[in-house]
Image (cartoon, rainbow, N blue to C red; front, top):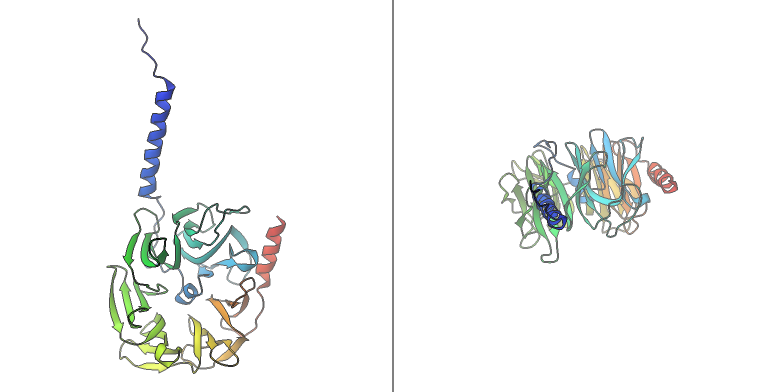
Length: 349
């Protein structure tokens, strides 16, 4: 009986490799399965997103970018106890929803160390413990916010300066370019992004993420709006960027500060804001109705990020140090010693 001829391996191996490549492309395009993210999820607060999303509080934990350790990703309790390093790469625009973290990777070069991702800049997803990391987009991005199970951001690439993109959290579909206009995605209420025009006007706009259409809410001269309940807080361009409140029900406006602002962050019933245009610029705190303004610290600060226990901020021009004070209690500023100590301990390992 004649034995069947054996096929040479040099024919079989390329065929297997080709099949694996095809399957790899298929599963990459299809995206990974992830556990459901609630539809009402908003990944971070408006003020924190404007502060580059350096802190994100979620289910009793605070995920943050540690400037004492190259902006590496850490997690801690809201009182700054039980601090752990999750990722050695620098991150910003941290969002959380479901079982996942989303963040923008800042590092431009590969590296080594705990959890360091050998990649360029881009948008990444991981589990809440920092594991199972996946890249969703390798281009530059800013103003990234998780809304339901989709990420909205201002996307940068070599072809176009800045465009509004929508990226599925699971990576299961192609990302979509929604607008060539700059849409500041920080303030989200009930699936709607409230933002100010930047080119032809400074009107208050609303972007409905369910239909991905926008409408004019109010033909005011606004900047950095934050929608809360029936009000929209904004910096008024006509009044030297003072903080105002606009009533959506009757159109009334109320001035909340006498000073020009650079930044502000609203958390619950307090506002932290950076004044400018005076001889003594300072980070201030006041009640949401504009009452009881007080100095937090003199100087110029940015990256203002608020949590339920502390509010964090950094000196403008010096991003290697960070300050904090109580969000609601008496003002008492320090340099976030727990983060510094954790960074020093991780360098020894």
